[in-house]
Length: 296
Image (cartoon, rainbow, N blue to C red):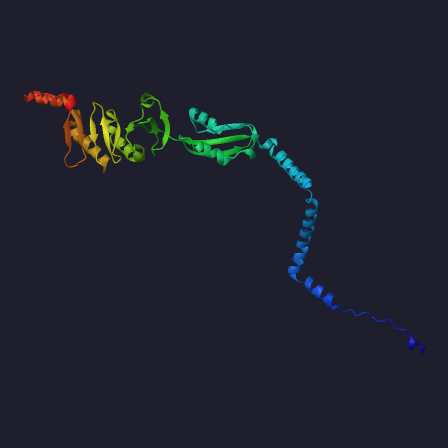
């Protein structure tokens, strides 16, 4: 009977409490688990960084340490550029490129602004295109495509050499320096280089007599020959007019005559103008008064 009076310890209820149950359910939530796994360390790091970077002197020291590490890395020998190589350029253009770049070598490749250097080189008239790259061995390689001059353009400001697109290549001191190139003159000649080159090609059979082309009114050409002969070409299809001129010359020996000008602007009726001395000879033969050549 006494055993009935003993205090029997209460057994703990294995079921979780309400808060334990909620926490367990929350932990099983994927979003909460990701937040706790990655957000917790981030928060800890943020707190530590705030404590460390709270001092301005400490922040400056940390920044300087990173700068020192970066400089040591960039100044390693394998990143140093000590040579400049220029390919595809004439000697004069290569000298102009070196002068334009004005590089102080050696220096780290990280300090080279390749886009800026490319822009400087492209600013040279004689450069059509350029590629820059840093090669192994510390070499800055510049590969150029140089513009080829095809004509000499005479302007009020002097002589200029142009490429086939009409782009300026370089200035010229004297015509004799590039006597191998044909001559063009007149305002707007640079904007009509395709047509000018086509006329020169059409006049190839009489190339030894061609002295150049003159742009008239920025819309048409005059073909200049030796013996001061001028061929007035039409605005439309000037190459066809040159071809007709060559046919007339073959059949009528037109260019051998004492003519000052041949006007081909009207394709149905060429107009011939005699040279002053030939016109005076004709006047003498007809018993007419001779006119001074300056008055003709």
